[in-house]
Length: 73
Image (tube, rainbow, N blue to C red; front, side, top):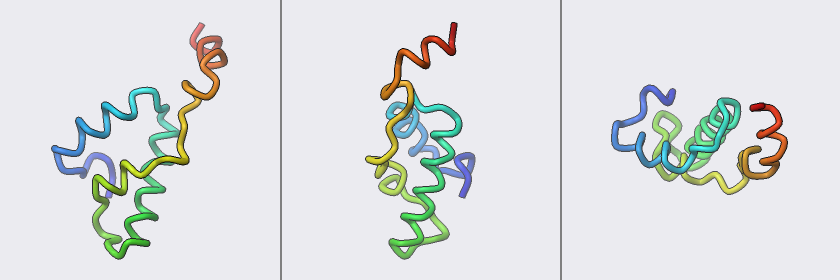
């Protein structure tokens, strides 16, 4: 399931909680959610729970805000 295939009600919840994520970090989130869905026995459908379970993904914009600011300049 691609992000473009997510049910509409998932989009605001995910968007509001991933505003500092880069494209690569969002890709990692999707991959981990897919693995979690598979592990939980529903490999054909990623749930909001799967997407929100991202405790191991901390965006670079948070872990190294100074580096991100330098790149933006």
